[in-house]
Image (cartoon, rainbow, N blue to C red; front, side):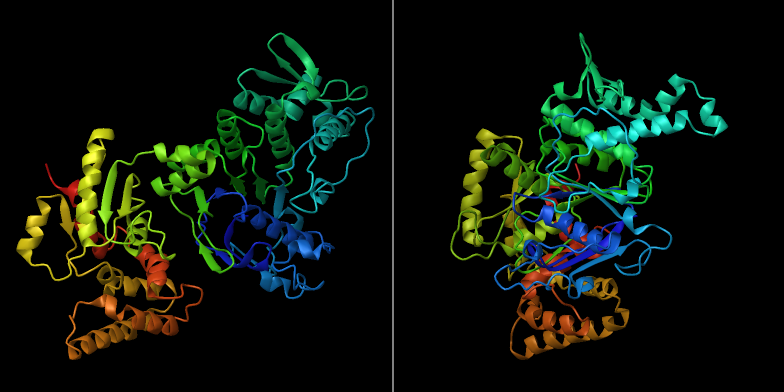
Length: 553
């Protein structure tokens, strides 16, 4: 069970959020972002979906679910619910065409951030319900989530039923063999995650029944004596192991799994849960934790394609928003460190600094960020994760400020390599060669728009949106707009001048919605993502922007 695409409309934090292009190979999906950015709202949407489709339950707190509590009405959430939360899975099914023989109650298994059961002792056993009923499932993601004692009862009841089973194979098991089958995996996982803690078992299930542990000279001690971090990690491990046999075709969701744990323990816990995850399942976690993200990055390297990172930093979810998986590059890590460490994040230094034109750092006039920097980051962040693009204003400011910054950096961080990139504009060849002597490189085309709206990119755009038959008309429209430039005595290579009209044409021709209010937004969020290393236009741009790194010794 793996998600392909999510669309959430007028629900909780989101006006119209789409998360798309989640790869089928993604076994782990990491949601990162600051408090209040909307990560938990994703899980709340899954939870609402399960309430309706998995358990056929209505929910009374409609105001909690509504995007606009001041104008909501009681039936708003449930009217056209299939249009508010749309889920697409990797079997060509949608929210309502539910998947074949997979029980609906298996689709999601969700843990809230309020996992806290500090102490329990059972004095008697009782019959347990079908685990798929998930009766102690929290109704909301703000609800307390206690599973430890329930899982204890399930293990104890399972052991008792197997002792008195009519199955000859079960009856032939020794006590030691039965205990190993019941709790062996839990013991091993506890050893994998903790350096000095050992899981001893269930103790006397009929008298003071609780989990027992050993640490150092403290033998067979009560569950309540674990530290907060130990309880938090044990809770997740235990619950996962007990439930994964039944929930074997499921999207697991854990809100802030790092709570109460130090960084190293967070990392080891994620590593173990990733190892335990059944092949047909997917694990989604929301986190602020550097330890979790660092381990996820390691898993991404050792298991290519199996980890997807969704970044909620600096997004306005009151507007239409589209998120796609990103790479854990320098910008992503910088945002994570900024969230986790605040001002200490500024201590991170890149390997490469590329100065370019655009609204310079510290300029508080207006809200529009540097267009060039945004485009370069999208195009080059995956291949050059340690490069930082810095806007310094107009060409004159780039020249003056970059020289000063390079001088300062040579004293503070001498290992950082710096250079500048200019638009070509109308520069002559001899001017370009002269600039190179000062570590200034110039695009081969007039400006970045010439690359973004290149024929190769437009071809790929039409293919991406399933309109190969539109390629010819899009390219013809571009040629027409260029010819009009000549009539107006404007440079024929000034693609920036026609980008607005060309965007309007593409939007109508390809039936695009929610892709940006203007040509610049569309270019940054859509076109730049299409310029990938396999394209000739990427290679041409790379030779200009990354020239100092491509020079042969």
